Image 1: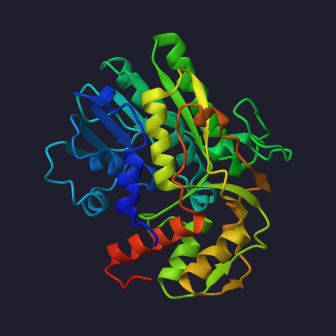
Image 2: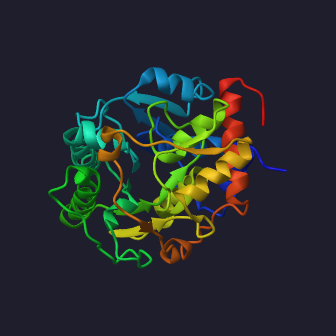
Length: 348
């Protein structure tokens, strides 16, 4: 039997984290209405005996009201509506900040590359400058595995730099993530701040936004609509994947146990598959088929050029983190069940 999203949250919360470090603290999660940020808020709020306050920040209040309807009247929860490229509309001492705000959308890489770069670089600058003046204890920057660039076939370890073409518009995302990482460690060195960097692999799970056009979201959206999965390529790209609850738990391990000025890969070693295999797995869970369709030029402009991206997670595992033991197929089923529940549809 597949555990539900709520049951999986409960399991992750009991994963041996030193929660006492958060006692009496204010925790800010930016990008809170996004896939990773929203799950992180869920995990923080899921603890029954919490003694900290969670501030969720995002640009879309209507989406936040829907996403966090369970917490809106909870005194330990507050929503801040703001854009990370603008000054923070608060005068609160945020003891811990997890910056998950980013435009991780291939469509935007082609349509608004300047906005993508500003969100990544200016967002880190705004938050760390605020934090150094407001008693910040630790900052976790949610970067991306795309900082490794095209790669050369090797497994990505955190000391590998890879190659990113700085003159390619598609590089707006990996290049700005790289720059934001450097800016974060410079703040740490120059101002004595404590920061860790997360480099998630490809993350999937429930509560993806309607505008999310990454492949996993498109595949899930097809199945939820009762449609066959539409492939826009041969799907031979080989990737490390990570369930969103596993990713959120990893971020908490970095927040509470990570080393200063250190980067950590986040991935599930049991979920290294091609995009075609991912499509087949989602189709099988939803009892649908996989069909091929040629992409439009605008879509192709946002595609990643990376053919193989496999992550080594030894450094993260040394902190005590492990993914939930259920299989990738079970996690995909839990994703579809949660999306069905939120949409008010029937279960699979």
